[in-house]
Length: 354
Image (tube, rainbow, N blue to C red; front, side):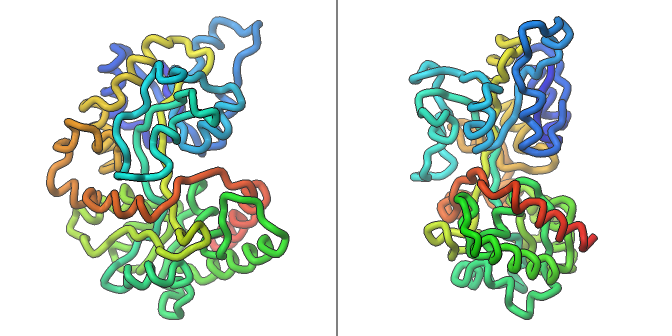
């Protein structure tokens, strides 16, 4: 069976847990980015061959808001249920978090369940707290990066999902709405300044986290809990993820994303797919997700009966106890309406630095 998902899910533990849930082996069809999920999920025409139907993904992993904002309207995924016939996740990422997880898992109409949450993370700022004050980042926000002491001491991660909206936040813009021409000009000037002063353009979050750990930089963005966990597990507790406390989104300047397991249209083995969906909060799959690629903020760790999956050291490495406070300082990620115009500008500026 075929799992269409980000490359991180090509993990022996995760694939083994899926096999246990379905009694069938899975292979991974890796996604380069969130947008690349659309093409392989376009519904087949009536004249499709048996081979084409068998090659359809059995399950797909998609991030909010791509699932409800793009894949669902395109007819690329089928709902798991309607009006409570398939219950949403029974846990929350943090007490009182708004919107609730059930809303993120639903279609825009609110009555359809589209996916079950697998993992999440924060698109925040990774800092060496011995050199950068988390309190100052809270008070000043992302403009702290303009401090002359940080010029040439920070890194940027070329992350297709998270960097553009964070750069827009640095420029004082709400990334999840359309921009005026004057705001677009502000973005271009601020983005170029941010890129030019960076000491490091990292291809992956792991590369930026390693640079923080060995002291080459003092701050990096975007970084999340999963990327920082290996260095913290190795004893780098001075390395932490911060959510800036001042910004254009009702005072917020950080966000979190959620990845969900969904059912593609024309799924070749729907019964097997639903067996996995029913196992999402079960211990075997949650344990595998939590250790995917090292350590990962698996949402199922918050479900009743799963809190003891992590060891004490792993909880510290993932900063588990801080999740509610960090998430409360973030907004849920949304689509970036200006992505088609602004992403090429950012990509060109980053490429010029390499």
